[in-house]
Amino acid sequence: MLRVASEIKIGFQHGRQARSEIARGIKFYEDLFVTSNELSWPEACEFAEKFLPILQREYPDYLTEMKVGAEVPFTSILALNVRTEILGVLSDGCTALSWKQGSTSILAQNWDWQEEQKENLVLLHIKQSGKPNIEMVTEAGMIGKIGLNAAGVGVCLNAIRARGVDFGKLPCHLALRTCLDSSSREEAVAALHRAGVAGACHILVADPTGGSGLECSSADVIEVPMSPEGLVLHTNHFVLEHPGVEERIQMKDTKARLTHVSNLAKAAYAGLESIQKLLEDEDGYPTAINRQRTKDSSVATLFSIVMDLEARFASVRLGRPSSAAQSLMLQPTVENDE
Image (cartoon, rainbow, N blue to C red; front, top):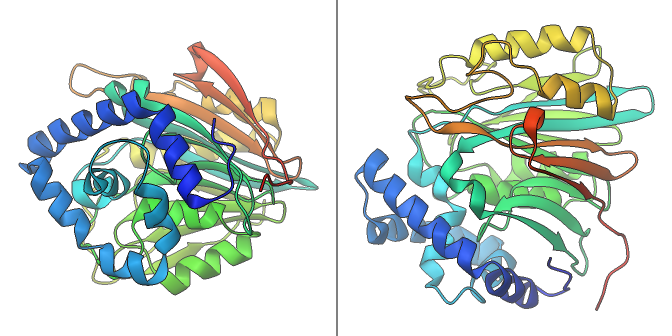
């Protein structure tokens, strides 16, 4: 658990306490880059270094946080944090939703990825000065992913497969951290419109006022607004037009999952137990909302998270939610330790 205030201390504690997980994660992505992209680890690190100018100029705190603690080269940590842009051609199977209903604001998703990376997930409790405290589930070594902050801002992620990387924009996982460093949904959305996002993904950011879907590509950031029912639903394909962007849908079940989660929402309500049940759904098994690996793919649901942003807490179930290995509660505090 990271309960420290400066970027240097956060990075040091992250690197020290998750040293084994970081080392395994580097090996996992080293192998994956070779098999999926025919890219060696030194070549991946060289690719990652192309983001240094924008990060040095606009986000030096993120670099500081990445530079210490793990006893591995800084460029290896940088490569982990831009792994979405390096991979490019791979997608996962995540299903995400936000729902504003009355005084309740729920943000939730199943995070699906290759099962080999499950052992390298870590829970970060970050206390920081001048920005909201954060609790998130992430891959070891990566400073931004899925969770919420003490201001009631939460963020989720859907991978999308589309061509193009812009090294002058913010990498996907650092865009997630930017959302978690924000004091409101409005601030987070404005920050990503201003910075741009380097490659394709969908970032779902929400707070007690509701949710905003941000479909990102190297060329644009386009907002998916709440429906009249207060819902934003997303899977692994663009639902809006992105002129000039070449999308290559990899997850054949993505459109069926989006239709199905839309139908399930009609019989649900914006509450913790109702959304947890929705995320356990196995229609279309094994490539369901609650995903199981198949003989052709090791992608499965690695964790399920439901956040109540008005109450500022989240319930996390590790593994497939219908057979979770462990349950955790996230509840970032407001006070800071200097």
